[in-house]
Image 1 (cartoon, rainbow, N blue to C red):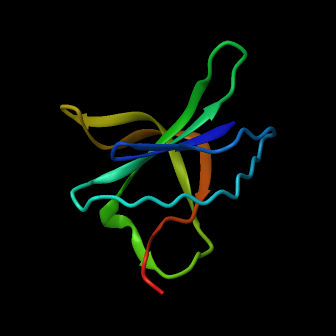
Image 2 (cartoon, rainbow, N blue to C red):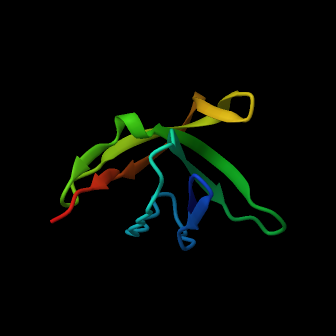
Length: 110
């Protein structure tokens, strides 16, 4: 499995990990404009011919805290559907059985 993070026009992907409890321990840092509303986390299962999505999560920027250092993170339930208003993502719905541990924060200057 691997994780894809999409924020504004940027996209990053973790390395592939095997097993039922994969651990990526990867940090991502983005410089983003203030007009963004949130970002998407996708969990994918690598396939022989094509990959399949296991779950998706929309995290609004308004819910992201500011911090100077990493924290313990939080468990987030992944969903199977995206809620859109036109082409704009508003959220996700229909929980799956998959969860992901994320430490999400806006980095403050030291």
